[in-house]
Length: 118
Image (cartoon, rainbow, N blue to C red; front, side, top):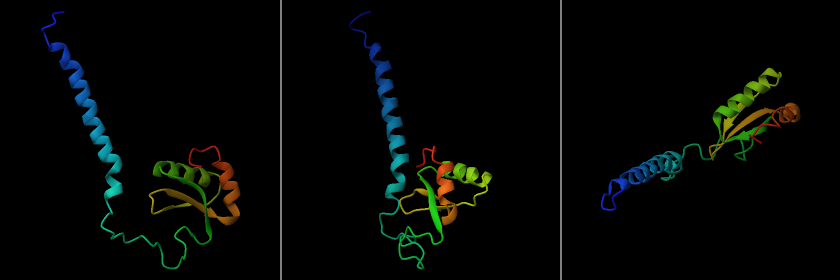
């Protein structure tokens, strides 16, 4: 290979440029939601007015909390197949809680205990 020929630099430069482009795209996709409400006009910041604590779900208790909405759907389906009524609530931090009635919370947590959500 001739030392004066610089064509051998094109491959690594293209690879570095592609990695930088993909990094910028994924960074933008991952952090977009964090800058969405910086103006302080979050309408749902305080939750429902009837609850004193924003994490108070009334008669319901969280059986699982996850960052992935699809995983929450799967947990809700699993609980439904076991005969446990479940619903979902999205917290201010974006995490999804799978909620069940207080008398069924221990059984629900046993069912989803092997889940990566807990």
